[in-house]
Length: 307
Image 1 (spheres, rainbow, N blue to C red):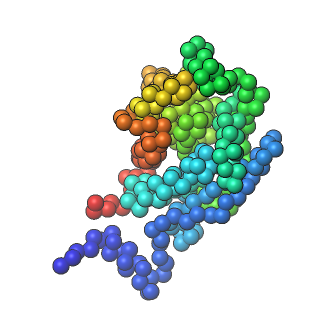
Image 2 (image 1 turned 45 degrees about the vertical axis):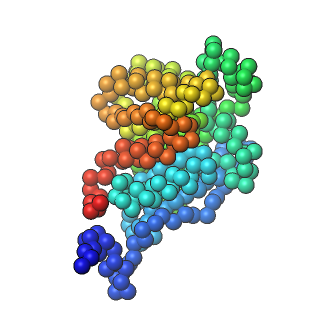
Image 3 (image 1 turned 90 degrees about the horizontal axis):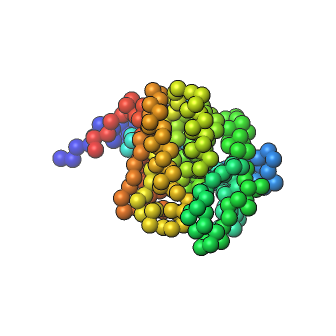
């Protein structure tokens, strides 16, 4: 005889015609929207995935995960969230992706540099790193300085887009910011540029040199940092000279080490260096493990599955 676990049995029963409501087991995706940030001359594409119970639980509000890089990272992020929600590894959450419009293709990807780095950013520090970027890659980040608007992009997310989406969706006052590479640099910047704007952070392989300065300035004025933070990097990123020139692993590790040394009582931090992973293959692991870390306080009350 085949035995049906109680959790699955409850699902089968709820799906019967006599049941008042059926809770789907998959997230639903909204139609993409375009929003013009104040001070910008181009639109951002906004993607939203709603949790399984959203349409049958009108009294509930949900934590929100803000995913950088729009469509490039949204499908993977929402997919992992969907699967981990099904397995009770994380609570039900709303996922919001923000980036350049999909129809612009790779040509529009360059806008992420302007969006994700604020004025004063340091990507390759002076010396061998900056020399490599200029001589081998033909990139001098200093020439982009007038175009950088990461500070305005952060204000757009918090002060303009969040209230706008909050009018349409039942968003709890519980916000997580996630990004990888330049997105990770932006997330680490947001952690210290606007403390308290987000409570949870998943930082993948990227830390702006400016953020190291912001961290020191914050520490000089504060004795606590109330945040849940996950850092993730891949050891294979060090083998890529272009990524090494940007100090993706070393500077991200430095930020994690400095925060650990501060001894902030309200900081819940975890750092992982993944083996045999490069800049792309490490990304799914960072978001998957990062979700479980930053939402650990909300996992205990979830129904336990028999596997």
